[in-house]
Length: 111
Image (cartoon, rainbow, N blue to C red; front, side, top):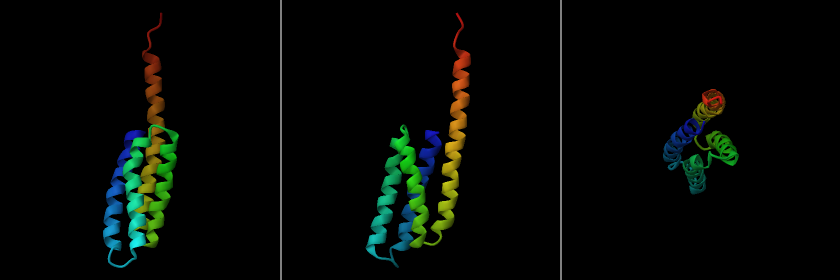
């Protein structure tokens, strides 16, 4: 679960960097600063994914990335794609952890 979530957040960091490059010529510096804050948080959040707060922060960042479509309209589509990947990381990760717990329980030796 953490590996998939981390991969999504790091890829989003790069996408936000490209979005800021698109926005730099036509928008105010405050929109670039907001994008930079979102990007930096996306780079730091994978370290927090061991706890529930990391997943909550990651979910909030997904909405902020979609919201950046106000500045760069193409970010709406990209944000929705990454939002889907984020949801997939949560669903597939939980399913994988359940299977792993089952395997670990079946490997314990019986006395």
